[in-house]
Amino acid sequence: MTYIHRLKHDLEHIRKDKLINTALLASACTVFIHAGILIAFFFRLPPYLPLYAKLPWGYARLGTQWEILIPLGITVLIFLTNTFISMKLYAHNPLLSRLLCVTSLIISVLFFLFVIQLLWFIL
Image (cartoon, rainbow, N blue to C red; front, side, top):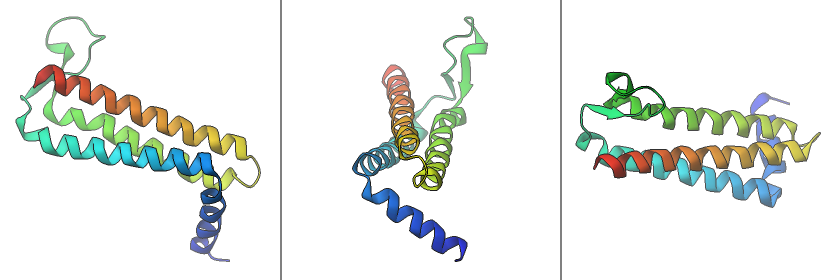
């Protein structure tokens, strides 16, 4: 069995689970909406953004315009990693696969809300 064939087989198992399917679909939609909003507003952003709220006042709190893409990158990385691990573990441990997919959804929603709050504050 080739590697691609095994991935398709694992994906078929995951698609049968309603919770995993819903969480992955909602997480993917959130990631795409997040990317679309960033693309739409990226060139309207000021050169420096207050990204790091936990740091003391001053220039240490500011990040460049490109650093607003970091949450999207982290979200995509976590989404893909959790999906891949979930596909591999579903046959042996379906509960862990469900938890990984729900965690991916929670992380994508929280990073999306962070970016929306930041854009609301700036624009």
